Length: 233
Image: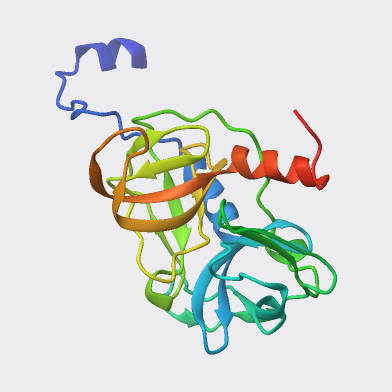
């Protein structure tokens, strides 16, 4: 008797409960690969945020984390600050930011990109900036340093509930310190830069919702194209 015949005779004891939450095992591999490129941003006397490598020697975070080159020049990126598989805390490794080599920012789109000394992307990897299709009801996952603590990832109750040409709003959890985190779709493609949360208005309506929000990568790319830092469509 073949395995197919045996399986066909077994009474069904399992079922999908609402949405299909099954993922290939490669989902975990992709998550770990993407998470390596995420760092805590340490800004003396101002606070903590999150950022991520987008090239071997360039990092992205929020404008409100690094608003000026002067602020960035005193900041550091702390990689590998996380709890490992054995439950041990890795204190991480620090890299100096180098706005004298490259720095650009946009207050309205709340992003900053800055050069990092030592090219940590060669060691920890980087995350590609792409124009990824995005629509309501998708799941979005956020790798972050919430509350200034070790790196964590939000994977549960992560529905995208609003999206336009600039903003994405979602139910994925964050905390202070998560500003500047990468927002990924379920294929671990970067879709947004997390920048705020709480009671925020939904554009085009009179309603306010308790949500988190990010700036779409495609809007940031459009701005980089206008500045001559990226190729067009």
